[in-house]
Image 1: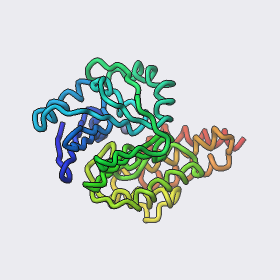
Image 2 (image 1 turned 180 degrees about the horizontal axis):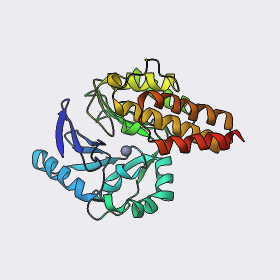
Image 3 (image 1 turned 90 degrees about the horizontal axis):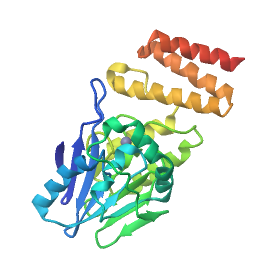
Length: 296
Ligand SMILES: [Zn+2]
């Protein structure tokens, strides 16, 4: 675990448990120490992960009240909730809905990732639009994008935004068709309107507005890449995510029985892969077969 202090009162705890060879996935837990309480943004993989966070905070600042915020319902962001049984645990109402439906099942499926004894611990303070802590200068607000329940935490004193998985290095993953991306783009435009000096993504390095601009630029132009395709310049990770997004779009349209759009995105994927050569022969064959089936 790596610890980075940001601004006057922010601490980022970065964990590498989800990284594997060839796949970097640093995950951030962000803490705002307000003098009275610790605001914990996301709780990673379990109470064992949170133990080191709590020890660090309590040793440095003494015992304070904990307030927990879950940015969205994905497992890698709330399994540590059970380390904060007496705390307020804040989440969007859609996050709660999704957790109720899926959290127990996913815990069984992903059990090998848990750190310590994970007991699914549900949020106990829900909001719909936003929740402001005026005295602490902290605003928690709904920011649909990565998922419909995604929410963010803005520290207006330090001008720090914790964006959960809405911002990704180098480009975001999409989970909806192009129509559904409009809401995501709106969220990123709203971020742009905030006075921000530091951005903490759910995964990846501590950054600034340049990450937001790059993500927004990508989403606004999708499915097109405005730059010429250049694996040297943008790096492999960029194209791995981009091809994954085109694949996702094709699959979503196929599910929606919009075969024409599905074929379009599968073909675009293959065209770009011709240049960047990231997919194996077998995957290319499978996609070609998929196109044939859709053309029937
Ligand atoms: Zn995540």
